Image 1 (cartoon, rainbow, N blue to C red):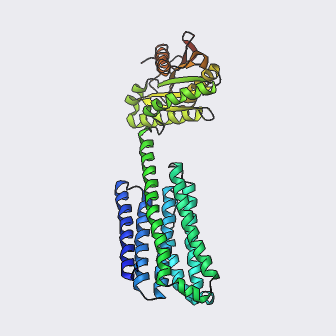
Image 2 (image 1 turned 90 degrees about the horizontal axis):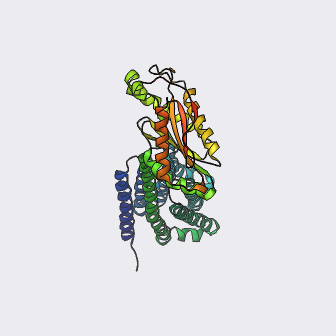
Image 3 (image 1 turned 30 degrees about the vertical axis):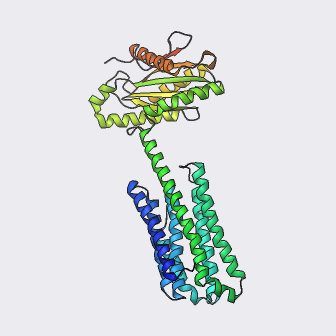
Amino acid sequence: MVLDPVTILVIHLLIILLVGVSYAVAWLDARRETALLWMFGGTLGAGIGIILRFSVPAPASLILSNGLIEAASCCLWFACRRLREVRVWPWALALPPLLWCGLPAWPLFGAIGPRIVLANLVLALFFLLAAREVLAFARTTPALRLYMIGLLGLQAGVYLVWAMVNLVSPPAAQAHLLTLRGLVLTDLVSLVVTLLLAIGLIGLARDKTLRLYRQAALTDVVTGIENRRAFEERLPMATAGAARHRLALGIIMMDADHFKSYNDRYGHLHGDRCLRRIAQGLKAGLSGVDGSVFRYGGEEFVALVSLPSRDEIAALAESLRQSVRDLRLPHEGQGSGIVTISMGVAMAEPSAGFDPARLLAAADDALYEAKRGGRDRVIILTSDTAPAVVSERETARI
């Protein structure tokens, strides 16, 4: 079957239209993802370049189309950078067309052959840069990342081979490569890769969006730390990890003392700021430790830790209590004059077995004892001992 230029042009435009619409629809579903807009713009530029290639006489068609196609490849690189939320340089899109318009003035690139070699090298560079960005993109599955890197590397390889073929071919062969048949061969390969890249890039953007939504669902909007849902998801995993590594598991329930009076005195805006400061202090206190802190609700926090011994968990709880005092947050509604926190700790060792539900209930009971016993203290419940007070500072009751 012989394809005439009009048929080839129609095929190109249909595929470009399909890909462009796919990017636009995907962007409408995730409007924060500017990578999809960059790819929509790149697809539009490539489509215009292809129209010029088949509708404008050479050599003007090659100069204009290659400039636009290289700008479209630059858009691909920028899209992959935006997936990683890193900076792009929109002004750089003007460089490929300007370069192609200025190349004929250089003696080295007076003939079309050297310009084609340079064009393919530049295209290969953009695809390799895009592959590098995907390699550094962590918000997706390894399989999808490998798929994208493979496609980008394949297309870069095609451009490099095409550059080498043009470089070593005699002028007569170069002229044959620039005929309709030669251009159709390379463009068809590029179109197939364009379709496959659209699938991969939309998949990357979708993965990123879903992960961001999931992260938002597991993050407390006031304090910026993980929330109760995240704690409930993490608890079974922490239990299994502690059992596997033969570590003691501890749940530390925490409650800011007299926080209702704090909100009444200072207002809820200052109350939110206070909670953020407490969360930051607790998070800093867990740095270097196998553990995390979560906002459990209201003025309550919970920490989930795995350490070699129960004594270390007890010492950590006392350190966290002291870290909140060290913030020196003013609270005129209680005797100490600063914000304090009460803690209830429940812990168990692998030899005693882990029951997450019982541990959580025990930590809550211990917190109740800490509040009832005077606040600003740590009370510990273990699987084999009665409640123990490891620290206390008498505070005024409401």
